[in-house]
Amino acid sequence: KAGVTQTPRYLIKTRGQQVTLSCSPISGHRSVSWYQQTPGQGLQFLFEYFSETQRNKGNFPGRFSGRQFSNSRSEMNVSTLELGDSALYLCASSHGQNNSPLHFGNGTRLTVT
Amino acid sequence: QKEVEQDPGPLSVPEGAIVSLNCTYSNSAFQYFMWYRQYSRKGPELLMYTYSSGNKEDGRFTAQVDKSSKYISLFIRDSQPSDSATYLCAMSPAGGTSYGKLTFGQGTILTVHP
Image (tube, rainbow over all chains, first blue to last red):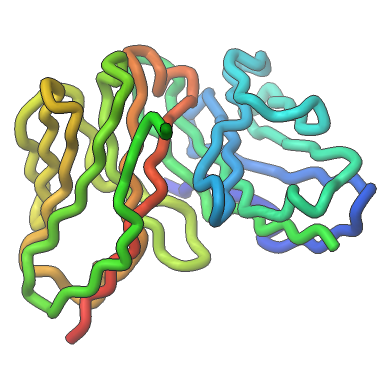
């Protein structure tokens, strides 16, 4: 079974631009979660989608948004990029029920210059 | 104070050693506990997933949970150089994993040298 796939692997953007990251979950998984990983803050939860609806949200500004499509694939968008947005963005998928565990992709490394 | 505390290390051990990794937590609502392994330039890989207090074994790995002390551990027996990675503990309240939100420790960097 294929794992969680994230594209692209690396991105370099300029401050003020916007960026869209993509995530394809494990087949059969309906929940997709997004995390930001930085050396200083570690892994922090951004939001979770299940059946195209955002069910849960972390403490990030509104510049961070996402969506989920009917095939469970998800995208995350960051607008008006800031230098502090440089991070590894991780996507995780799960069945989204009964406390099923999360499985992570290899992430998108975003660098904002 | 962070909800989950994990010693960042780094931890360096010789091949074949028993490794002990630990996390403490303050939120008594946490009911589900996980250990992830993260290699450089890769995403976290789920190693162990437990609910109840006690031990759970999987090959060379043993996860231990003590809810009364709010303390979890991961033991690695017969450690190998391929175990060199960052180990992350993660936890959630009941229902929490269903909604995608885990609270992670900072991660412990482990190096196993031949």
